[in-house]
Image (cartoon, rainbow, N blue to C red; front, side):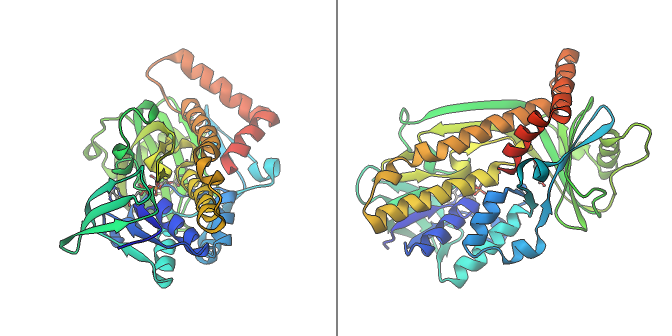
Length: 386
Ligand code: APR
Ligand code: PHB
């Protein structure tokens, strides 16, 4: 088998890349370890920057997004029992759209299959060879037999636990990383959101986030210790703790409760490897960088990477210009590091770090600055909307 671009991973990065390449007349094959059902139902974040929405729309993927996505023009920061709205659209002229990542994935899979794409689900034992030559090759197991895919370029879009990044010889990549001493417990509930916009909340007990998926589904998170056993969090305890953290002084306001149908713990990590390419292997999305979810940047960064990569591959295959391909790492990393900083900053400002009362006071001072100073609020908004 031969293709121009062999893509490992059918997450948002791999699927969108395959679609953008198709629009440029470049062939690809996508290899995915899991089933279609699994990738379409994996619950992840749900905030799309304006730039991400624009890219999806321009690529012809805007129909359901425009019908079902919820445009939000602000967020609330809640601390010391008070809520403060940050009017992002007023400050920046841009907004975000709340639309689940798995909905983006469903739209991409449907569109790619309608366009006749070659997506192989449930492949195993994927190995990359010949990355420094002209014919990099992917070997894998599928349909009960060993297969070989000869490519011009391989795109490693296989997430943090994929095989692409570890295939690069030790010493070629530099790793930058930070782990945080906490995780998020996330739930999806059949409950009409009690708010119109997201709430990022700092409480003595820790961080809480109020988000949503639709008019009928709420998405909520609580900061918990990293080794937290989800069995220790029956539904009643989750709702009580959410009510405690979101409490407003002098008010009996609390989140709307409803049946919880999904519950999970997400670790928090910051991670970048450089460069984002090695020979004929190009890396994108979670395969090369991870951000803690507090800035809602993970999906947006993946989209930005593959958008830059698709243009570089267009220049190379169709324009015989290898300049953009050579500068892929440099071009993508600007956004990557800006989002790393923003995600680290939001995380540091909004989580409880141990029992240090001085740290808590500093966090409140920082939050006060953001809500009282239009300059700070604008800086936060510019980064948040992208
Ligand atoms: N072979 C084939 N596929 C693999 C392999 C492998 N060895 N290892 C992993 N995969 C697949 C995974 O099953 C997954 O479907 O690669 C895909 C990677 O998808 P994501 O983890 O969603 O990563 P990415 O497409 O970069 O999207 C980044 O995901 O984690 C969120 O916050 C993050 O929103 C961001 C987005
Ligand atoms: C979500 O809706 O899942 C979500 C929203 C904002 C974040 C993270 C996750 O910062």
